[in-house]
Image 1 (tube, rainbow, N blue to C red):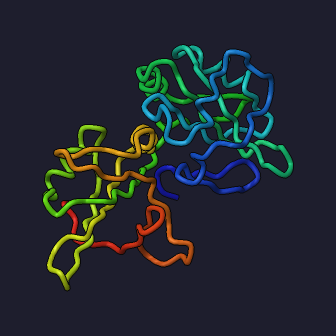
Image 2: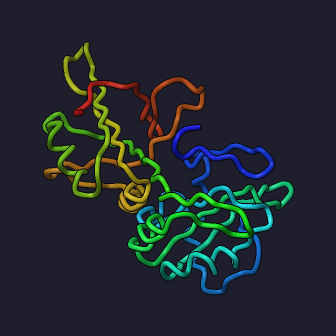
Image 3: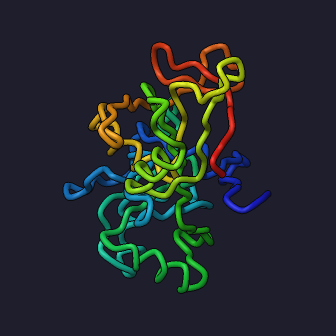
Length: 227
């Protein structure tokens, strides 16, 4: 198995990328000061630790007792099976400071309940937006440079109309973190060089075909990119 692939006790395999969504409650003793951020996808990724290889009986409290030696913990989420309520053998922990992640990784082996566990820096999930209402007057660089101020861009898709020999009126931009997308969606109307554009979260087409859509009228395949 590659980096990030783990096998929980009992043989269940999982991967960090598949487990970043929240919604599954943690197990064990509740912590009244827990912010719940460990359950939020794409949130606080720089302070989030993925802990694999847990025994089924490991609780939030035991994780807190162990990892609080490396810094103040903001939130813990032990992933459980929604049907049985049983631990799935991994958890996410969010520290108050990103420095705590480095301390954990530099400490060597970690053992909880007589079982060696495997902590890793949680992998950030990419986030993708649909940008509509693009004016022909806006250049590709105008668009890219505007959105680059919000976060690190990993891909830009500019669908091209070969018939009209010009860029279509929309594009897709992928950031290295979903948190950037969440912030952008708070302002669905943005202005680039005085031209108003629409920003929506890009979602897969319902028919499962390649490409993405961004709400009504936002269908389009991959066009020319800036990278």
